[in-house]
Image (cartoon, rainbow, N blue to C red):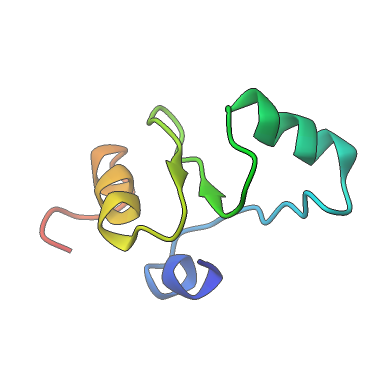
Length: 68
């Protein structure tokens, strides 16, 4: 996940749910119990490593140019 976001030059916050109780609670509030979960502002969260879905969410949020 980090490699994908870094390659696309997208800033991100990496939260460690196993070390941070607040991050774990936030994960549960999203109705997920496993990681990774990618949250792109204004878009539904993407569970798992689903590169097409993540790139689509980034495009829809205006964080990637169309066609990239």
